[in-house]
Length: 476
Image 1 (cartoon, rainbow, N blue to C red):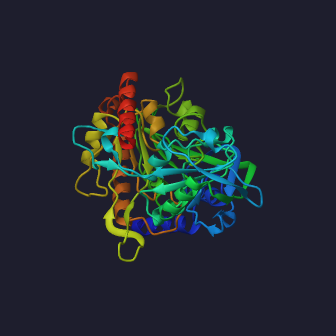
Image 2: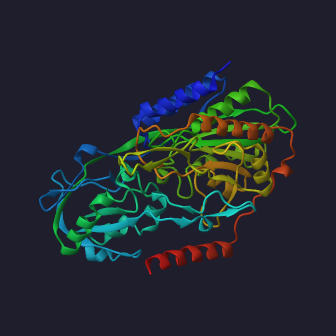
Image 3: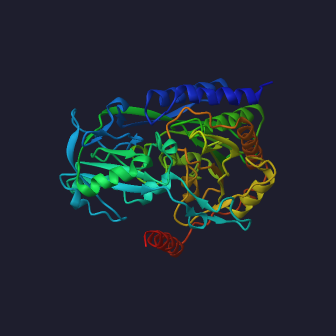
């Protein structure tokens, strides 16, 4: 009999020991091989989809910023931004403001921009199934980094020599190691993030046009590779030609992002130990942190769906997906800065869960079956009209009824080896997913899972208008 609690703790410890696992890194590939071995040991035939791409990796020892004679600390490098010559790039600073930045003003200079980590009303991003939402707003640097007009390709085209992004509304401890933004292709322009504690000095220097030297060395490997893994547990009943997709991803920067493989393996063990009517397809997606390397649209799991329609689309002789489960960010602790010590540490609370259910029927099933961060209640939400966070997005867009956990702590994209996983909460969430799998892969009629209805063009336009109005009012 497996002691799952101890096993889960061991699997979290493995993530901490591996450290950050950016796409295609040695640590990332090692975790992929771990999961391949685990699935093989359970008796599965493990299949691989290889992704080859040009990988960018910063040399952290090379990072440097000097304004005049003063060294300025750097929170993190901007991933896939660019690199400087060995001795850096030296040029006057210029401050650029607003969403639509006048990059031409930065020609021959190093641009300084301010990026705010601000609360966005949850109602702009998600919708309710009638039971409210579990949080009033979303404050996450992922959102700020995407909404701040941070298009380095335009800066490069305008002749800028580099970009310094200064955080506002994010503590120095939380800003450290943030791997943001992570959805862009290679930009060809060196850029770094500077902590809020340096904000006043850096902005003042930019207004004066002081001279700065930015140094960022990075290696580019045109032959990098990473594998998406998948395995099938065949159904044994009359519904064996119907499939349930169980999805997570492999790359991440800490023990929460991404620990979904713990849930995927637990569900795979359950599938191997007991017959189930429907076939279950387990997908361990690579490329979540390097989306442009695997797909031109949406999240990384799109690449797998496009490569394997026979496992979900109902093509002749293939499987028809009737449901999906997407497992991300299990057991996330809530961290805060201690006002006395300044330490960024767990405060005893858990992050509020973001649980998508893409049909009303699955929302009701989730309310019944889910025992997670709050063991007594769950509040599944409906995807918003313009955004669906996480790897559940491709299933939603392909109208596969899905339950997806994608809790979003402030530190989600931070590269850290901190203790940020609550094993008890993780175990409850895994058990909840296991209960959902048992139901979805069992004898229930697929009609009881509901029908996914995508937002109309008009709904998307209205949602975009509301977001745009919100941003304008903030800057007004």
